[in-house]
View 1 (tube, protein in one colour):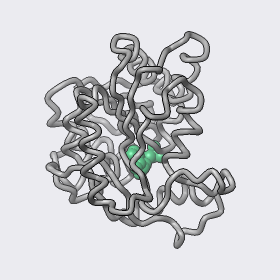
View 2 (cartoon, helix red, strand yellow):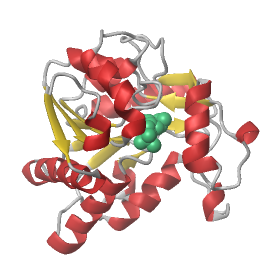
View 3 (tube, rainbow, N blue to C red):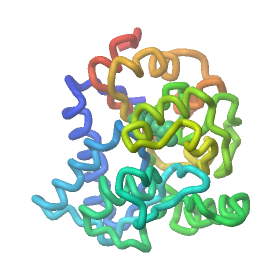
Length: 256
Ligand code: GLP
């Protein structure tokens, strides 16, 4: 595992974007697994800049997002701030700023009428694309990757997951509160790639920022491998895994 500490959020984001950009240049039709949350925004903005200023070409790139809230999807009729779907997030932060083809950018569909069946189809879509070349990951406050909450099996695949209170609280503070949506109205379930789905990627790139993540990332990287912190699964990853942290997030690591 490669662990890299950068001075600040901006440096972390630039490096993460350069890892992704190198892959896109090397393999123009690569398959990227993408993540949401506050952490990857800087990475996406840097990728958009590389597209705009240096012509980084996404025309053949395929993407699959980790997760989506159940019961919502992009709704262009809603006032901008009210739509907290991850589909909308991806559109605003990345897809509309690069030349990716709409049909190649996949976010789990939160309004699927038969979500269990849809989850199996999502797995098949990833497999049919040839699998994920790189999966970008953040870490949730409770140690989740995607929305694989504590207790999720390492054999889990794309499925509907109940969000635990910590995730609801964190995402409320980070996004929903600003949008004027009450905590009661927030979705309590999500579609998420499973831990096993994520671990099948050819490479992993985790980004972690801020003092608020220092404890949980120390446990995930240096503590026991446990389903109670699903991010700890990356310790068992057999191929290329890079973790980029900013200084505050890395401040509790002991083995640097
Ligand atoms: C959400 C997403 C995760 C993400 C996590 C951390 O729960 N489902 O994939 O890693 O948030 O987000 P943030 O970067 O905002 O702390």
